[in-house]
Image 1: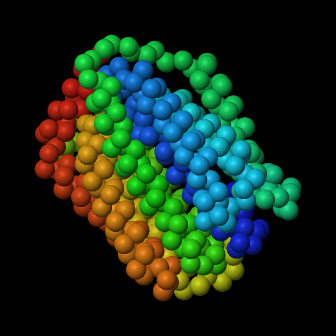
Image 2: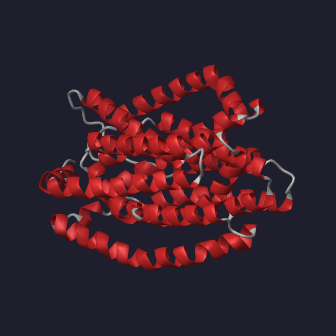
Image 3: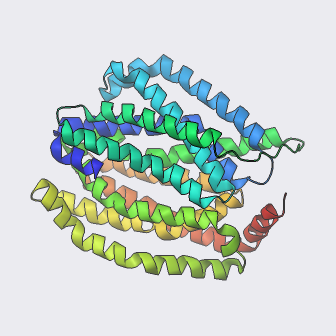
Length: 385
């Protein structure tokens, strides 16, 4: 609702700037996380906590140094005001810390508190921002977004970081630090590829036309409703993966198919209603916006199948496979977008769709061929205590 309010109440230039700030913060947070969140989830029972802390702190310090050195160039490239730097840095640090708490809870199977931290802070953040924008339409949305985000993230870090303490295993393993660092690096590169894919509109269209970027942002704000649903399925499968993998690959795929059948009516309704929602919010929908919306909804719908399968790869510590898949997706999206985006923003949506279809085919083919090894590895991970 908050994103939709921004896209209806502000000029295209403000919407484009807001999109660029979100993209820059997302990339910075991924650099600070450095794959540690995925490492926590995949190795939750293997005593990596102290090594994750070392890697995480090193990544935060390195990211701060790099952004201090290159901030002027980045701000100039994206036409972002220089005075947001303090708020920007505090926001990305607190978000990175709260992400770590959330994924630590997920790795230990605490679904209730994971949902509170992961989704609760996002809902709180955007709900407060929504109220601010309703009562003060003259404000700058990107600045309010950063300031409120800092406060909300800090509150969640203080509450859950000290109150909901977790038992930390400190068992020693020879070479665990090097092993953890290697896995973390691959997870980081995969996560960086993902966030670059998610922000392709700001990165590619932002350098072509603010009007096109604003239109894409509006359409994406509606289409992402599908992505939120598919992501929730991913978290559910990751948290209950021990239960879902008892009956092997056939049993797991039955659960995935059930999830897809539950999701299918939502996807169909979105395909039918999304153009009407757009028209009610922004007026007549252009032909290009209509095509972009339909393509993005179809692309994001594949996540209901792809995300649970990726959860298997993550839990089985197949970091190299995830990395390979995400890099190829990144090449597909930016290769096609760079060549064709100047003609129409529709081609950016088609590039996103192509990458999602590739991901679906790749993960299904790989896991089906290696399911015995993957399920044996997952089963063994639950026996390590």
